[in-house]
Amino acid sequence: MKTAIRKAISLILSKDAELLNVLGTTVRMSLSSSLVALLLGVPLGILLGTSRFRGKNVISVINRTFMAMPPVVCGLLFYILFSGVGPLRAFHLMYSVKLMILAQIALITPIVAGNMESFSASIAAPVMETAKGLGLKKGKTFLLLMNECVFQIFFAFLLAFSRAIAEVGAVSMVGGAIAWKTNVMTTSIMEYTNKGDMPRAMGLGIILMVIALIVNVITHAVEKKVAREK
Amino acid sequence: MKSKALKKEYGGRVVLDVPEMEFEKGRVYAVMGANGSGKTTFARELVSGGIEDKSVRTGYMPQKNYPFRMSVKKNVLLSGVSEEEADRLLSRLGMAQLAGENAKKLSGGETAKLALARILGKGFDLLILDEPTASMDVESTLESEKMIREYAEDKNAAVILITHSAGQAYRIADELIFLHKGMLFEKGPAKDTIDDPKTEEARKFISL
Image 1 (cartoon, rainbow over the protein chains, first blue to last red):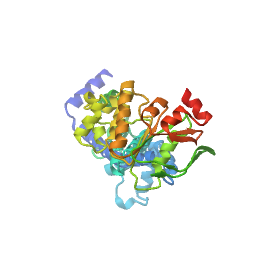
Image 2: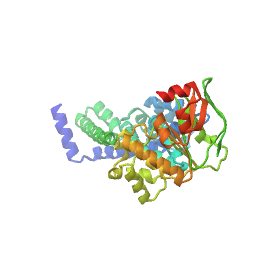
Image 3: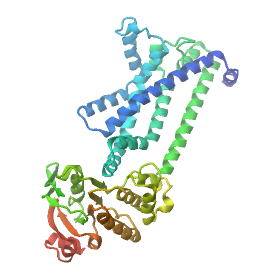
């Protein structure tokens, strides 16, 4: 174990090319999918949390159901759609990072939307009542609402990123865990472990935990700032 | 300006059923009544299209004051007042030293003063204030009352002031509207109504 950890640290410090490639693919995929999920999920969540319209409850229930979707089910769905016999095979996205990003967007957008829905619902009534009482226009009211949600949007991004970077089921199904192409940290850890290459598996595990630590330190700092504001 | 006859039900229970009322510019109307008498529902119904003339600019300060996530002064500037006027309003309420503070950090009483300064910065034809001084100290309450009275006169606005304090109604209101179980029980000159309520319900409430 100690030897494996020592070797893992030396691989990280020596900037091992394969490790760097896996790390680059992981960061590219996780950041892209989190950002797109944020762009889609934040407006959807705020819409669900602050508006009344026909079919809202149906959308809300569907979104919550998707929040609980197992990653392998998501992977299976994308596999069926984009595989050689699927209706979207013409896009030739199977076993590509692009499809991994799409699958992750489908997985994490509902989480971002659900998170924003709960938060915006809790503050929408007083914000909108105050803004209406002041005679502010709808555009200004929306901006004020967004301003109240700034920290929550940041939390939602961190949540989405954490989920994306740690996800393994969907990305391995649609990405195929191909070395130097679609292998990300989680799928690589599985692969290296199966091959018995413990130093590389441990090295990636250490990097993953360091990223998780950084995300949590940032979350904690933001939480403290929010608490100070209250 | 004239309000419509307003009726509101929740789950089959009538919580508000009041006739049309006339509100004159430059006057302050105190709305009193026990908890659950329909005062806030009356205010909300007035704001949500309860005034016949759609061109009447109606402002509303809710009972629960919401400080937006920005400085105290920026909150006041949301009303569209000049920087000088915002400073003057805050200063009158003893909030000048808090102008640059984050509004989320204010105490309950300070938040109420901020909300009052913010709403008084804007010119409305009809301004509805739902218990604006409920969490303020005596000094701030008296200054707020002066400012509300001045607002009605200077901006030529009708002010509807929801309050639990007969003393406050006596000090600044021209007329008093007394609600009981969602119904209008009394409407008349504030001082006369407080000195000599016509209904038993109003007499009981005011004498407490």
